[in-house]
Image 1 (cartoon, one colour):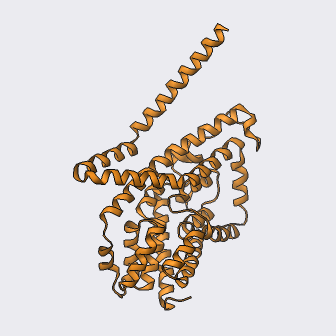
Image 2 (cartoon, helix red, strand yellow):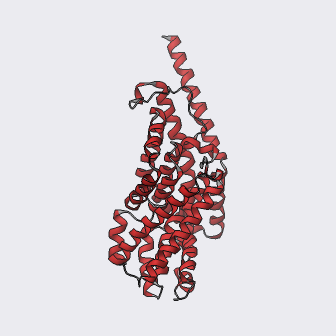
Length: 357
């Protein structure tokens, strides 16, 4: 009895020490420290904005929580059950069919530009080829069922259908470009080394290699599950919090009038400039609807509006920060270039069609 109590006490103390160590690692993390520094600087120059930015960040994280939990749960389940190898096999079939299907599915999936990041990490960590992942990655943030309804109501059905087709087209362009470049070494192992496998550097050697859908029946698989969801949850959570905090600052300090001054005129540079401006100026998909509607009323061309809303959805600063932390620099550069190029091409096609489909 006494020996059992002593053993339980030791185990409890050990857990406290381990958890304290994990908390200390989070506090010492450069991303966390940078976020604290930004809050401190903001407090010095605009104290009233601190509360608004923190509330915005927490609300954004709360709204994303279901998708975030689902994605990291998927990653943990895949590792604990050894289903990641099976998943990779499913997506590693016919590359052309897989890439085309990923673009189509991405255009109707309910993920935003930041919300798709945990799922992408899980897919790449499971060994899914980069081509279909990139197709899904680019297409997914542009359109979803709720976005379709709200965009049709706020801007117009014609623009909404064109935007949906643009999402598919941009996904196809991105996926097939990666497919064409797949033999280049810089596309091998796209995840950064410290997030390979969804947040950890290697597979837990204690997990049996056999596939087991009911992993909770084996203690070592349960430990692998907990380790995986903790690793990827901390890694992606800190970057998403940082990204949403920056987004709150853009909402507070970036004026829509500045955007109108540069992309409101009907000129040959309107579309590429709108795509470039859309990257740092884009707020979020739902906030962009009234903004783009207003820009169109002020004289922005339909093509420029399409470039702004699609480029911003794919490669806004919050999304780009999360992607930069996830993949290697060459893959990050390719992701940005494909997003901007696809946005300009689809917007140009929309423009030459007279803003109709």
